Image (cartoon, rainbow, N blue to C red; front, side, top):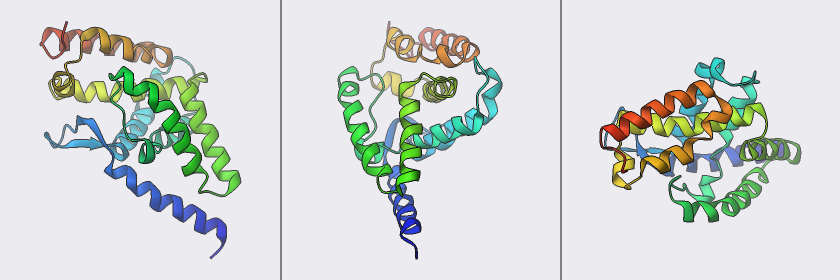
Amino acid sequence: MSQRLEQQLNLLIELDKLKSVLRRTRVRSAQGRLENSAEHSWHVAMMALLLQEHANEPVDIAKVVKMLLLHDVVEIDAGDTFVYDAHASLEQEQKELEAAQRLFGLLPDDQGEELFALWREFEQAESAEAKFAKALDRLIPMLLNYHNEGQSWIENQVTQQQVLQVNQKIEKGSQVLWDKAKSLIEEAAANGWLRN
């Protein structure tokens, strides 16, 4: 077997660990069970395919989907950080960079560099594709929380202001989706799922 194929297969087996990284949001279809990061990545990639028309700017949807499938692989090493935990989020950036270097470093150089560049582009959120991908990445946990009657917001005593502040990034990728998100946040607050 070629060294290139061996390197690619090694990363594929390593990626299986993403199925064990639990998030704070529960899946809608099996209430009570926490979502894992692999499920999240698949779900948000499907969102990109379905909601492409709502991006603020034209996007290369294949690139958006690639970014979304890659964006959380770093959680294999860095773990998932609850987006409303400001302190933990400060430390997460360095952990994720080190994880990206290790994981993409398992691949042949050309492929590893390409995927690492895509991951960095997502993190920097400056291109139209990265802004849209970030918007979707912020929206899907909010949708699950809303449809689970505020489950992780309630469990973690999240305020309406925190949700507005953290998720305002949606606006940079899609004004339509940000308008929808704001209406969900207002309803969630009215239902008592968010603290004042």
